[in-house]
Amino acid sequence: MSKAALSFLILAIMAVAIDQLLPPSMDTLSTAAKTAAGVFASLFVAALFVGRRIKFDPVLRQAKP
Image (tube, rainbow, N blue to C red; front, side):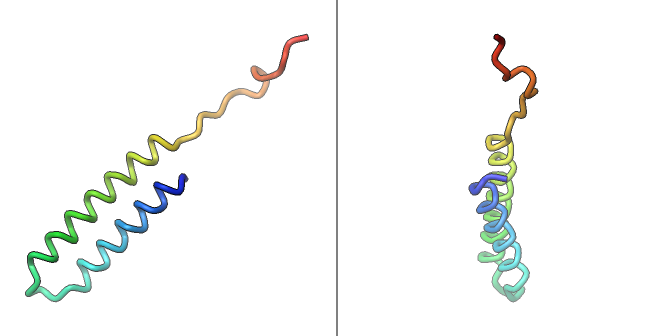
């Protein structure tokens, strides 16, 4: 997992935690926290796709004499 993906995962978890800890009377801030959690979760998935490693067959990398 790349550093960017890990960062977005942590930010998404923090936004969900903030949303859960807010009192019910703070609807606007709760909506903002939910939106932020959705954005960070989407960026986490995108970072996973961008940061994936392609593994090649080691036999193909050997130099031919």
